[in-house]
Length: 472
Image (cartoon, rainbow, N blue to C red):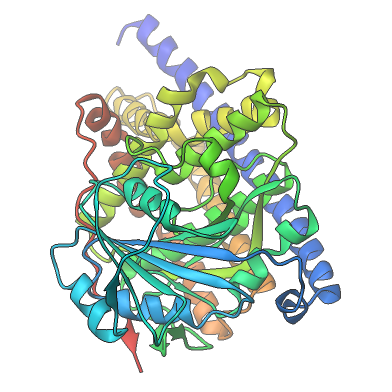
């Protein structure tokens, strides 16, 4: 082995060590900030109960927009969940985005929907609307049937054209909301109505949960599927260990497309959802941030830790790979579109902290991790491995990853107790160790492959298989 190549590999391994320490330091900071944020939120909720929000004249009406493409497995339960929400005034707009299954027929039959002529203003471009349906029995429900727009953004824009209210809530067509989720997530708009532009809530997995009348039962069960259990850990880390911390640092740039609430006027001012965006949720929030900074509009994007939306996670490796590949391509496209905001002081903390964080740790992280594995293999081949140090590095990596996962689980239990059995928490703790052995490596490969797919122009969504909710 040439000395120059060995020196280069040594420099690279030292760089990986520094990267490892830095990324874990940032994640620990997020967990600490999240803990402070959740405790502060719990103190506030003692003084303002959800029923007080229900009777408050400051609670603005909300339009709930739920795009649905081939969601026959769970669409009826999802709509029932939405119609049963506790909120003073809201409407539910289900946008059937050219489904080829029985989604439209099931909705029409179940909710006694009839076609109507309704005048609306087409502010945002979208594919043609074929029909609008309402029901005399379910007066809050509107069904929009449109030509498929090859993406969720087009369906959301159609819903925004129909929406009547100043706030809108964007959710997935296969999601379930807790009955008081709107009352909880709207709180920041009451506290700071001038500056709050968008609020995100918690996404948790409905795999294994029993559903009764459009609501999850009080004590959900852990799913039996191993893949779903790993994803439960990911969602805990992402929302309660990550986005809560980013919100505390005034740096949040993602409001999940599965559950988020926005001011309609600011979304329209930014041109609505971008049909060309792979990750339409991330794209919209970044554009809102850019718009507000450029117009010098004081603004906040907030995360609230207790309103919960339940959604189904993939239970097959191939489907999970499609989903995570699309998420990574969406992140890559965001930096392609808005790269000039990175390290640009004009965009405040978003330009100087949030976007650089996602660039270095989320976008490039899988590439760096895979290069680290390849370097380790080369060093083994050339008999240059310091095995005691390698073992120590691996052990510390697993311990830190496990501690971050367990911390996020307890943050979840602190904000909303949903796994009351210690056995469930113990099982999740065990999976937080096991995920370091193969699950994490699989996702790194999928996310690295997303770079190749993006630059090859392979930006299709891919089919997401749904099995429906378990009912009682």
